[in-house]
Length: 126
Length: 372
Ligand code: SF4
Image (cartoon, rainbow over all chains, first blue to last red; front, side):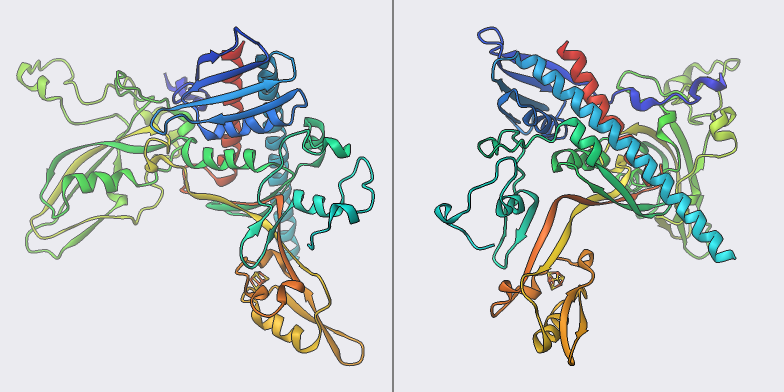
């Protein structure tokens, strides 16, 4: 019984999970679409817009929050020809790659800082 | 930066931005009236006509991104994050404030409160107490869940001020952790009073929380023992039980794991021409943040230097009046963030940042799953 909580990280259990509500306009032309995402806001949309903008296949991208009391955000993706859905997926992948790198770099910087502190403290003792 | 007519500009070398565009791209210029070039040019093809690729690309990011910690204590930290777009840095900040979970008191069962502080005010004060417990060890409790040892922490508070004794102050250390869950028996149980079975209480714990390895050596308590909750006069009493659950700052600020988290852009102060003698003295005196120093140059002459640009608060005192703007240029580096995190105590600040980054990763992951 006692182990039920051991080292399991409940951050994984989402507070409210994201859902893709609709994909407007994808049937007419797959290179342009609006993705309507529920339970997300500027945090994800603005970050994804950045990585989308960095993709040379993008001709236009932007996002909007149609109403402040709806927990929903619309991300518009228009490409130069590739399917909008694939480009959005790549943007997510890139953002994840960036996050992983940020985490690694940050953890290393913290370790370096702590180590330099220990060295400083030893210098003082001598 | 003086404006140059396009006709007078030298031919732009391909593959490289002319200096004035490079400055606009990488710096905010803080002029005496207003800051300019505050926007970030994100579009990869923004400079395509000049043969410049504006995409940061994942590889470019991987090789340019740097972090340096400048201060780290148990409660707060400051670090420099260089080579990242504000869209991402701001996502981390927003997640730190609103989406990294903690435990906080959500339900308060008041058995008796004869103090002057009203029940609802007292309950609100209790909610705001930071708890010294790792939220990763608990589950979220949704509306239909029963309170169990996996999602609820129970505290009890029972203080009485005896008649004839002086007034007492109730502080957060009076909150006593109940590892076995609630001691209050459900109202519906009392009539049936089945004496053999254990009476049902407001929680259904299957085991005691203090048998769990994480808590056996490290009991749960408020982070700070000296937070004032109420004052009691002679004869007054408070008896209550407080149930803490896991939540995020988006629902209520009491779950926010940070007192605050913010960043500022690295200030860059540059002298456009030499500032000497009395003007140098004047400049040093103008700056309240002591950014400038005086350096002696030959023949008793003095020259102003920029010694501590990081201390600049951007008060713009140094470019006020006369033609000071011709001498000093105040700028901010657009991709250099001085990030500060103040933790309320559940997790150390460096742990909070790591969790925030993980949450953004999780968001991308769930978006990827719904897209495929
Ligand atoms: S803006 Fe203010 S703090 Fe910054 S250098 Fe000028 S006078 Fe000093």
